[in-house]
Length: 174
Image (tube, rainbow, N blue to C red):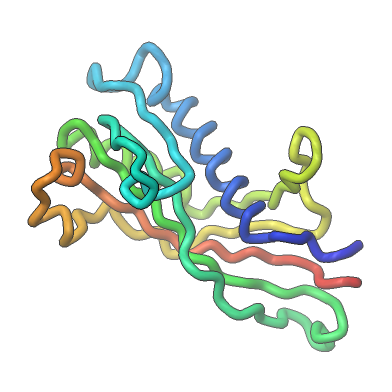
């Protein structure tokens, strides 16, 4: 088994898919949206960084910088189990503050203690990547970012953030 190329991209896609499915099951995308709110829009980037209009109830899922790989087993330098931490950010731009908190709280519940198989998005149907899995630790939020407190743009006034540490475990065998 070889190391999965572009692992951070597969991690991001796996987490976006997981949160999309979870929020869909909680009716945030369907016709019966809680509290009569507008259905959510999920994006895999920060919308203001790409010039994408920020719609009411946008959920933006992005990743921070990947940390150094950690050897988890003796002799892992020549193959074996490794881990790497990558911060996850889920920004919720709600139509109202209470709706932002509700969506962000559901995101937090979905992430708490989640253990997922890393999926290989380079293959049809994105099967689980052999020997790779994801744990979610240290889920924080929903937080009201400081930038939202001085916001002039309407979409930032109801902004909430959920942060988490994702740890990907992988076997590094060539």
